[in-house]
Image (cartoon, rainbow, N blue to C red; front, top):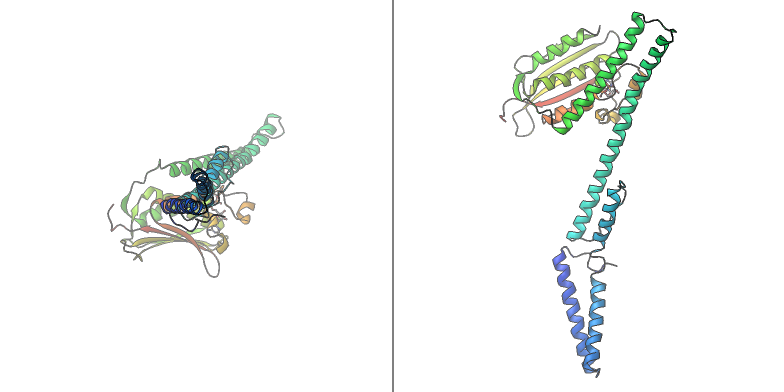
Length: 339
Ligand SMILES: Nc1ncnc2c1ncn2[C@@H]1O[C@H](COP(=O)(O)OP(=O)(O)O)[C@@H](O)[C@H]1O
Ligand SMILES: [Mg+2]
């Protein structure tokens, strides 16, 4: 039982304890005087009653602090599942709630870190194992070092290289070591450049529809990287004979800001289900279909893209396209406000 839990402040609680204790003590002395108990005995009695009163009223006031100390020790040892009871409304209760929130946050960070290490190891192991198998066969003379085999090996090495540079990108972005070189820039030439580079590697039609005059405020190189990621995905998921469209337009923003530049990448592939719309931006996330296809990346492209767009203060999200396909929308702040 915690009688003072409803009180909203530690000061008020202390006041209540003092007033309650003094009142009871005085009452005991008064009553024992009336019934003729000797003064010494009545003082001892009043002290005992006063102390029990403090025990009764203040019960549970500092218990969360003790719990927090214990939980903090568990956390230091790497166990994040301890929570403290936060039933009171005072500062100690607030602290306990903040403590629990922090514990949950730390547990999540710890989970992400573990997942990351596991995922990275797994993604590195696959191409390394493939390379090792082919090399062993060559050394044993089972397989000749012909151009076809060497090309397979080169592909694996390139995949490793891509993975490592994506991981570097992610860690630089997260640590803030990759500051944005912000400027106002025309969106259309960036999109043209991305499309031209994409056409070199695919037979899919990559069409750009971007009027001049759509201007964004940000780091053109990073935006280029994002759109290249999106186009690469769109091309990969396109059926043969499908087309990929890259569009841009200026839009007035809903808020007080200076409008936005909207870039869309559209394809005619399977699209992204609404249930996956946020998950695709998680690191190493790939849908089952994408995982089954041997080619393609490790699921880092969209995670990197989202980081970059978030740094810009923009938004990125997938939409379903009718009758089929995916529309990736990127919203960037337009150039009008100066920073
Ligand atoms: N245009 C798209 N159409 C359908 N699914 C997509 C598309 N773009 C991304 N996805 C889904 O999102 C996942 C994550 O994409 P991404 O982070 O770029 O990783 P990766 O390209 O390495 O698979 C893909 O594996 C796929 O499941
Ligand atoms: Mg990708």
